[in-house]
Structure formats: structure tokens, C-alpha cells
Image (cartoon, rainbow, N blue to C red; front, side, top):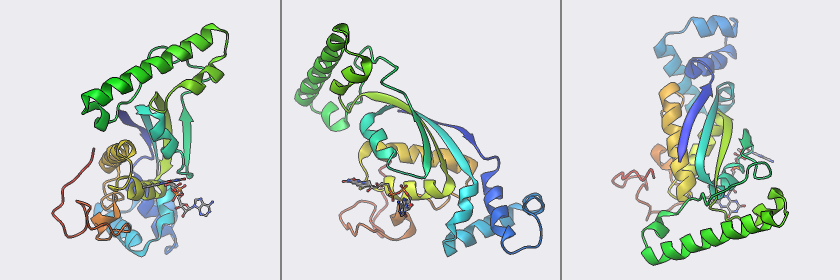
Length: 228
Ligand SMILES: Cc1cc2nc3c(=O)[nH]c(=O)nc-3n(C[C@H](O)[C@H](O)[C@H](O)COP(=O)(O)OP(=O)(O)OC[C@H]3O[C@@H](n4cnc5c(N)ncnc54)[C@H](O)[C@@H]3O)c2cc1C
């Protein structure tokens, strides 16, 4: 999996804090943006997060390049509606060789791995055969497995990212999208450290909506981060 933050709102923390201050000030957003020390930015953002006034987070936007992930992952990712997506087209791009993601549970089991590998090879053989018979790529792709690798560009604002991280960094999320969510979180923390300081699974904020006391991250237990 390759995940990169390719673009973002310049100084996202300051933009979010300036937007928040506009609602209680006679000054313009630009004045407030330019006239704020670091401490004020931190204080304002912490206040809006505490109050749950999340709409101001929508002013900061982040664009990620994600590749080497399965269509299992992207199918889950695109369920998040407040985002923009552009994905590699299987109508245009021929997936010439078997390019797929192998789940760790399969890699760890030699017999399962062999069955999986044979199935992948067979799928691609059928795919190529169909195209050799004149079937267009857009129809031949019906035989490709969900494990097929893909790439996608995703843009989300900070509010949607907060929501995405709450759901997808949780131990209840599927392992591949969970790994992606943790990587995206670590990337945005570098450029918007205040906005995303407390982002992550709800248990990091002391509450488990799943009520799962067996989970290694359940609040109060020894924290054992399972980021991959
Ligand atoms: C652990 C896990 C298991 C899952 N299992 C399944 C499954 O078995 N089957 C399945 O189909 N999906 C499943 N999902 C996907 C899930 O149901 C959501 O589709 C997905 O997580 C997107 O989240 P969302 O709808 O909250 O948010 P987004 O689309 O990211 O939207 C953000 C928020 O905006 C608001 N919103 C968005 N659209 C509307 C709207 N039309 N009306 C009102 N409010 C709106 C909601 O408050 C929503 O939470 C699973 C997700 C997780 C994390």
C-alpha cells in the first residue's frame, strides 16, 4: 500500500481557527487568520472540538494518492459520501499480469496461500482468454477478483476525515482499510497537528461505541496500538 498526501489547504489549523472566530467577531476572516498566535489557534480548535461545532473543519481539505490497495478496500472507502474520488478505470486499463493484495491470514498459511495463488492465476488466465476472444476489457473484468490492486485519489475535508478516522481506525474496521486510515491520520497530523490531535478511534477519547470489552484498545486497558 502506498499512501501520500499530495495536496492540502495551506496552514489548515489556522484556517479552521479563523473560520471559527468569524462567528463571534466583527473582524474579517483574513484579519483573524493573519492576527492569531499559535496558542490562540490551539485554544480555539480545542474549544470547537469540545463543543462539537464540527462544521468549521470543512474549510480545510486534504487530497491523498492511494495505490496498491484492493478493490475490497476501495469499495468500503467510497461509502464515505462527503469526499471526492477518482479511481483507475478497468474499462481503460488492462490489468495485464496478476496484481492483487494477499490478506495476512492467507500469507501466514502455506496451504491457503497456494490455493489463493492458483485462484488468482486462473482468474487472470480467464480474463486474458476472454479478451483474446474479442470481449472488451469492461466485460472481461467481471472475472477479476476483489483482491485486484487499484489506485484512487481521494479528497476529504477535515470534518469528514474526523468521522472516517473514528470509524476506520477502530479495531472493528476491516484490516486493510484500518491500515489505510492510520496512514492517512499520520499524514494529516503532520500538517494539521492541532485539528487532528485527538482524531482516531473513539476509545482514544475514552468511549467505545461498540461496547467491546474484549478489544485490546478498550478504554482503561493497557493501550496496545494495532495500527496495521
Ligand atoms: C466496522 C464497519 C462495518 C460495516 N459493515 C457494513 C455492512 O455490513 N454493510 C454495509 O452496507 N455497510 C457497512 N459499513 C459501512 C457503513 O454502513 C457506512 O456506509 C460507512 O461507514 C460510511 O459511513 P457514514 O454513512 O457514517 O458516513 P459518510 O458517508 O462518510 O457521511 C458522514 C455523515 O454524514 C451524515 N450523512 C451522510 N449522508 C447522509 C444522508 N443521506 N442522510 C443523512 N445523513 C447523512 C451522517 O451523519 C454520516 O455519518 C460498515 C462500516 C464499518 C466501519
